[in-house]
Length: 90
Image (cartoon, rainbow, N blue to C red; front, side, top):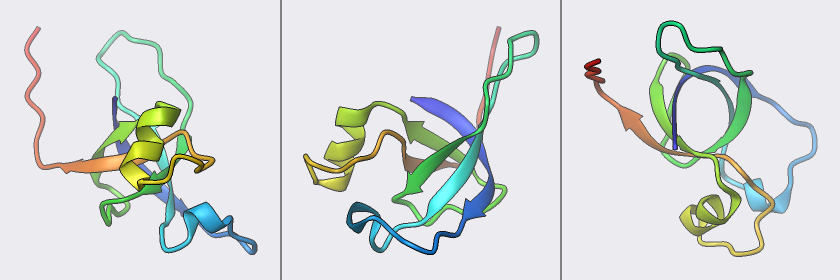
């Protein structure tokens, strides 16, 4: 699981059947101070998240397919929750 911030949406001219009815969002992983930043990635939205939302993303293929209830889906990352707040303690 990864915590990230939704930074954009993706518009496609041709959609894959496994993505029907869902949006593709650009997610920027959140990191702790001093950690190396990871690249942004695409995630299929299952929560109606929007730009600026802090989200919880499942980035493991089998788990993502279970969220979609489709064992054959060609997906790796799925947004599974919108976070209201985060409290970190070091």
